[in-house]
Image (cartoon, rainbow, N blue to C red; front, side, top):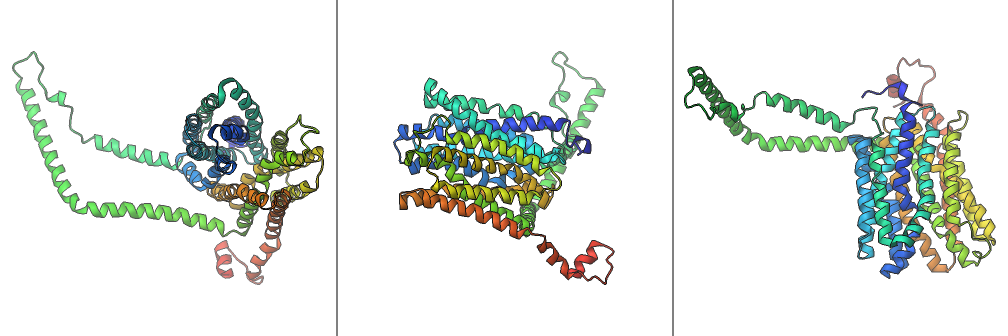
Length: 500
């Protein structure tokens, strides 16, 4: 169970990549193509568009907002148990949605339950992939995160056919049954390190084994065989000795219980203090992560990107319809173009991140800038072909999600990856949940998507500028100005003390 350098960048790691790819494919296929179910829910429940749209917003944002909790679960229980549990959640939420009587129930079953399950899958698959790869980590993460894009493309077509053949309820039941295959994917996720839960379980098992040595002997040993009416003196003596031993042990146990009854309150207080210390230590480590300037800039950039780039993808087709451009060329939907190019972008950007002379942080900032410029050009585009090209550009650079774990590992290290990635995904999920209502309010106010896309593009470009400026090398030089060049430091401790 100990980590081994031979397991990195090959071997069983590629099995992990395939299993993680299929896990994201099965988990995110239905939520990423929720737009197919949106018209069916509108017709079935006769609710407003804003209320019904909350289902898709929750399923996309809840899992990311809960990423700190998901990261804590992965740290404590390990990737395999978390993936098994998430498979049950995703499948159960999808099947439960087939029996939803109203939109409010659907927001819980599909939005919250499925969303949390997807969040657990996302954190578990990215964490175990980073542990198995070092030099080829960017390529591995690119392949794994492509599973969401491939799932969105395949499930969009599959759900349309299933609705025609079996109806909306039958479609959700079949999709939920397919999601149970997440449990099979979890079977391949062999852990490199023993998680905290197993260490606690091992210690408890050792204590339980020691206690069994002093347990009472089975009752059958004290019984006389039914066919015999008399007992031998040796057997009678043995039974008496056992009874005396048991009575003595019971007396000792009762005495010990009386003594411990006075200290039970103190024991409870000690347990509570230990739990508080553990949680305080975890929160302190998260606070230390947020003291890193590069990590703060990365969180702000991810928030602004999620706030600005996610809603236009949902409204892109409606933009074409509102401008009367859908009749020109409609055989390739804009949503499908975004899904395909996002998958290509994840692979290409993942490969580029592995090149030594390319700075992954500046690469991410460039993707934000390019996507923001494309969003700013959408309102001035008057042809459907132009919208298709801009959709492809936005989709390609939206593949930068494959770089998040890579950059997080570079900033905080592999040991604190799960905690830092949970914080990062919290900001991303918060932006995804706020984006559609804000962009929708701009449309309700102006009855046009122009101002909404200008707002979205400006947010993404601003995120690129913040990330680029706050990660310049000059900030590291300023930190080193406190060091005295005339003093020779023999250790890092003396250097830190001198700077302080």
